[in-house]
Image (cartoon, rainbow, N blue to C red; front, top):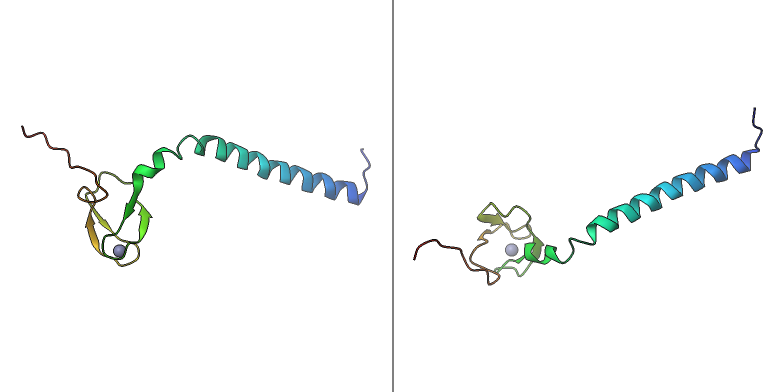
Length: 87
Ligand SMILES: [Zn+2]
């Protein structure tokens, strides 16, 4: 049986848990860093209360502002043009 003292066991436990957290943090930021540029397309600003928020569900045309609870049509603001197939 391997004999270790209590202080060494605590330090090993803390070191392993700290390495686990750092590893998860690096893994999370490694994949998140690629999407930071593209997240700007999900930023919307409420025209009534000027609150800026993220909206990731692009399939919904009507969004509720998280601050003032106003209904907003996302195709008509932030300078985004509505796509139309009519010619
Ligand atoms: Zn608002």
